[in-house]
Image (cartoon, rainbow, N blue to C red; front, side):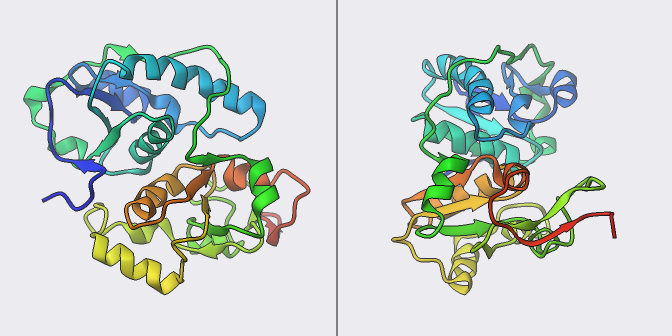
Length: 264
């Protein structure tokens, strides 16, 4: 039974599949006819150069999706990169969904070798209505609900990032942000929790549906999963700060709980 309308368990022969796993995983085995989109795993800032680089990929990808009525994104299973791709495509007006299966659960008759990985030169920055830039966030910081979806160690300034923390990395958070741990969205089997469970979490945090909401993490990936869930729970003004803490920490903008990791 499908719990969320952005998830689909159906494998449709006429759908366009986007493989958001690594290039190596794609080359080894993927859904037949799927396009490799490992670029979505890369961190992107929200400056002009980063948006132009992302725009080159997205422009090429949109050309491929224009002829398909169904776009299905997948990674290892209901993960942040398939959700990130879906969130970005929705912001471009493309109807996309996340495959609600783990890759290991896909029937073998649907699998084959990867044949086309999307590669592109930087292009023009594209407009994605579901993402926020650093300049927009700085301007609206006092009027939005700002949600930090990193782990409690990251939010509290104990780690600069969830995995592979770098010596000398800047720990901390954006002022005024409230915490909602991305890990709490998943159950013990690595599947997204039910709508009722997520609504209970939202009520505990005290989010206001009518107020614009911006989410961030370390590099703008984990927050896309949370954004998808919020948007399906009645929140209409939801966006992801694309640069996230990776970008904010390098600026002179205000920060809370700042420390340099590994230098104590």
